[in-house]
Image (cartoon, rainbow, N blue to C red; front, side, top):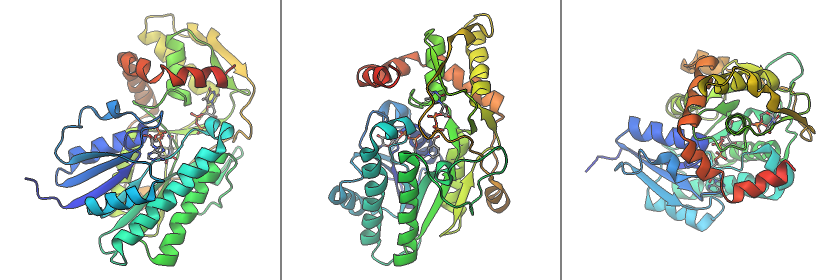
Length: 352
Ligand code: NAD
Ligand code: TYD
């Protein structure tokens, strides 16, 4: 029997970032019970957690965060005292095709969790925390210069970022109106293992391997700030334990890349690891119609997190991308499983 010190609910724990966070917390805190609530959409995959699924301090609950009654029951059954909320629809291109599901999950789902926490904790907020995981995309788009800080005004452009911005506002409203203890972090683009191959990095690694065209939006000049997913998980752990209630923390690695430059690094890395002539796969680059409302540049200033909590990214990008490419090459079975069936249809519709 373990002496349980905390009961933490992680939503979206079967997804990309969530699975890394669940693994980190389950292994690091044997005296916490980690309850993973996930409805298992196309992006949620329990195979991401195979290595920890039998641990005694881990529980999986299949549940839609919008199902308020079921969510309330989970709070009571497991005596939840902390929430780390990651469940979301997370892909900008899908949000352009189907904005309703983004409003439903990201806004209504967050509201359902906030209400459940408020009812379950019933004004007794000692040692309770509702941690909402958000994105830098709520801040909109930067020009050539400058960074997003925690003070930057919200200016979302895609249905995805609008839904995340709305959920952030709901979280703050529960803090201000009901005194619910909350914290929010806004992170830049993540990369690493177990990312669903509709996002740029795993999609392109997969296509390079299979000699498929690489659909570069516009001129490939948009800039993203890339962070290794395990560094994000470490930041969440730190903020959850040491962050100040009511605060916002930006998370990013000061690691900006123009898409086309990043794509060329991926091509070189995959070619080398597959024993092809380095750069040979550049012939696969195919410029396609730009994404509607495509934000030009994201760049996070994470000075507050460094100064107040001492967090820094652990990996240089070159090392991170090498590890990531190797992981996808060594886990072709995982890729095949997640890219079969419904995903094929999505891909054909998206890139026809
Ligand atoms: P993901 O799409 O890989 O995973 C989302 C998970 O949420 C999946 O397991 C899915 O099954 C689950 N989910 C979706 N709808 C649900 C619902 N209604 N009920 C229960 N579970 C549901 O996403 P990700 O990339 O891991 O992102 C996780 C969080 O981090 C999101 O909130 C996202 O906005 C945020 N974020 C992501 C990035 C990034 O680069 N990926 C960057 C910053 C912030
Ligand atoms: P993505 O991984 O979808 O993340 P986000 O849009 O949330 O930043 O895309 C990263 C960048 O890559 C973005 O500028 C869009 C671009 N992109 C392409 O050029 N082609 C693609 O097929 C995809 C999926 C993205």
